[in-house]
Amino acid sequence: MSPVPEVPAPAPTGAAPFLTAAHRARPVERVAWTVGAALIVSGLFHLVVFFVAGGPWDGPVSWRKPFTFGVSFGLTLLAVAWVTSYLRVGARVRAVLLGLFAADCVLEVAGITVQAWRHRPSHFDMETPVDTAIALSLAFGGALLVVVLGVFAAAAFKHRPDGPAGMPLALRAGFALLLVGLLSGAAMIARGVVLTRSGHQDAAYHSTGALKPLHGVSLHAVLVLPALAWLLSRTGWSARRRERLVGVAAALYVAAAAAALGWGLLTA
Image (cartoon, rainbow, N blue to C red; front, side, top):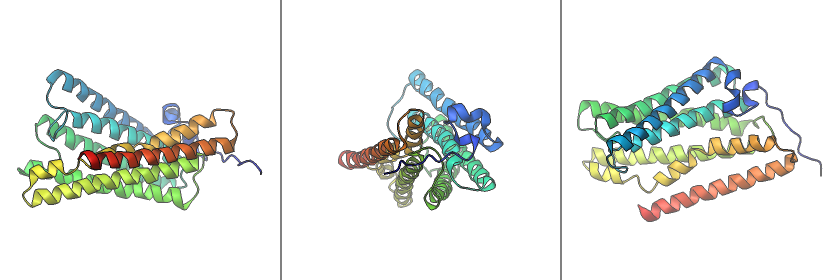
């Protein structure tokens, strides 16, 4: 059986992970790097605020939310700016989508952060016009995330992505799991909004527990699996062996997501 041939990345931005490719990035990618790093710094800053100011870790009003959302959105933005360089998407289309995604990440984190400083829940709170505007903007931003990342996911499955052995599988599995995470988040928001609109706001805050573990685990597959494929490309192992290892890692990640869903359903 002949070995699986290597497929070179088409652009310099895809030739290395984001930590080593930033200096080769196009303008829109540099913006994404900057915004992603700023969101991570913002998240870490709010972790310090939590330790200084105290307060609950769980619940609808907590410093946990600007911390976790800042770090999570920052990492996801960095990951998407890197991994989409392997996709066969037109440069202009990719630039527009990355710009929309970066702006949406800022919108989401900003809304959550503002509400944390106002000591108000960020989601499902419609008691005042300001709270309603922020909650609806977060819901709109979540829908936009699904659309933008859905386009990237469709591109990953329509045309085989470029990159070293295992990267196409890593990208397809990563985007599929990312969409699961986004759709679980959309389901949580939709259920919470319905409960809030029907006068059950407290129930809305507690209705998302079953899907939270799945949401958190599946979001970062688009970073973890491609990063593994890239790291394996730096070894001297055969292409077929590296593809098998990425396949095993993808299967384990799917199992972890399923376990997270099961855990959420059991403990909600």
